[in-house]
Image 1 (cartoon, rainbow, N blue to C red):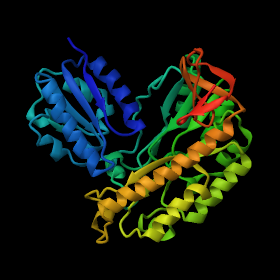
Image 2 (image 1 turned 180 degrees about the vertical axis):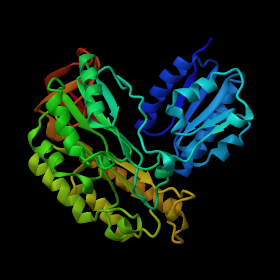
Image 3 (image 1 turned 180 degrees about the horizontal axis):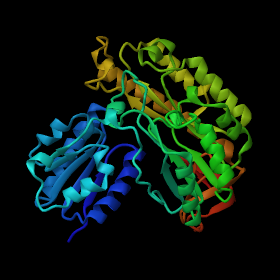
Length: 418
């Protein structure tokens, strides 16, 4: 009997769910299988998924090949039509024990080959929580799934469904277990994290969850938040930023663009000044706060003047860790139908200019840390991260999983030295 092989494409949430599937498939007794957890964020992501499936079939000619994830959810017929694929299961089905029990049967019948239901009908988050996904030092906790918004460039709501939240009590209990197992940092993750709570009784906000975790799990050294939509940040979250040193001073912002007209065409809910105002307020409350951000280059109708506003936003918001996405036309999204698509060469050039601006901000941030003391969570004997999520390299081995205090002596590439 050979354990199933898993390949994960795409986001951190997919990686989290792969860990859940490993447990579920093991409990079901599945063997001699290859499972591909796909991403649908761009057309290129789907192309890569198909390429990976063909490669895995060549390497595993006798294994059952099962495709799941967002691309399987949004276009199951594409993967069901591939000769290499034995079964296609949706994002809801992949988190159900009974799905894996059926996959563990000796034969997957024709009627079971595609198990993909309407994701929009799902009203609860998957109940399968993973204790300890991540490194030995950092664990990730999924508190939310899906998205109620319909940005014109994004296919993800059709892969993930509408927003749904894990109740606060369930989250707190899980984090307590993680702390008991020795984890020094927990990261809250989701598809649209700042929408957490809207579907729960009394409609609590993300800030309420953060404050509750910090109050009820006093032994948790570090709590980190993954990507947020700054326009949805509530008063309690701002209060936590101002008063809770255990909430890490690093926020990844879903900004997408720096020009008001393009933001409206993207159907975003904030304007340029909203983003700048939030960043200024967060840094006023927590001077050591650093920001990452998602920015798309080359959205349809983007002129050079529009793009320059995105470029300036990097400095205006004091962004440090940029995730630059060259716009990729995605069938099934409103943006794909906009006639004024930007040509590929221009998109590539603008993406490079944005990345260069991000590199300059990283270099500035690193230089400013030299001579300062930092509390660093060790991910391996020679590498850890500061509270601002900056990598630090140590020549002398440190205890993995522990928080050590060190003085920054220099920089090397995108790392600090200690």
